Length: 401
Image (tube, rainbow, N blue to C red):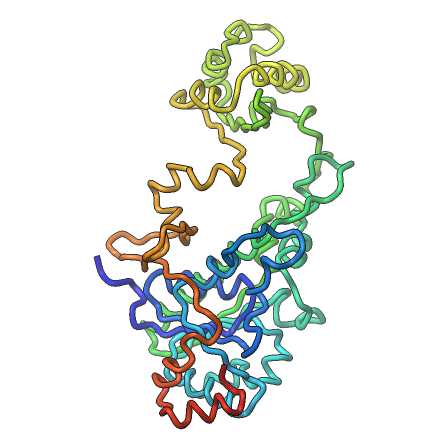
């Protein structure tokens, strides 16, 4: 294996919170040298996420671990002229610059594409925003909970039924898919650069990714499709594409799309072969017409055994089903471990979540624990040509932390 596809690639992560920095994390997983630029003092406010009310308490900064592994930290005050000069020098030797600052903030700091592109003709400038860069909402702050989850319609669509309240999102659930979109844009631009020799600006945003995620039903709305009311689970239209509670309180979901062929197999696995030829459910139209009745029967059946028992009964049957996972399952999920979904940090036993792509023959970096604020400031500055006296002056002025 090689040392990483992006070994030697220099990336400036001048962004905060999750989606844009996570795209830089994926680049680092494949060997890129990522410099995390954050303000002196408090650093990226995302460092403080686990301290907010409602988040799990831990001795480890789990949020920072996943988003900033492998990176080097430069604490730099971009509001100071000296800080701008440091950044400009770094940009001149960089391959990728990533930011999610609102357009008006970029203009104020002098880090818009028009400011940086003249410094480096090969620069890939990756821009990420909440609602896009045009229109009246261009400078509106966005988080995945509002710009991705709520704006896209998903918050409304996943409700159990029309009478329940909209479903809340969980931390990062939209940011991480968005990070993969931004990563894809960056890699596409790098490929373009290989052919043309020139850099370019790439863009993505939370709102666009949200609608892309809900695009099957959003497209249906665009063509004027007629929608049916969303029914509660007990009144779903198809009993073999529904979720059921087991004796131990755990849930599983059946997803049988070829039910004409699989119906006898299902009844056998459930220990209810009498249902196979039951005239109420003998054909697919019969089962759909009596879905409420069949769901009630399945509810009684699944409630007789624990999830582990049902997994044994259903596994290997060719039936498509899934476990409704809970976080307690993840640390010991052998399938995730076997497939490097969970990997240990370098020189540590703590596991972390791998980025979800692999390239045969190309090694991924063994995850390194994330940096302390400004941990690599001196090293980064020396690499940019600053001598010790200049570094001391930058520290004295408060430009560098």
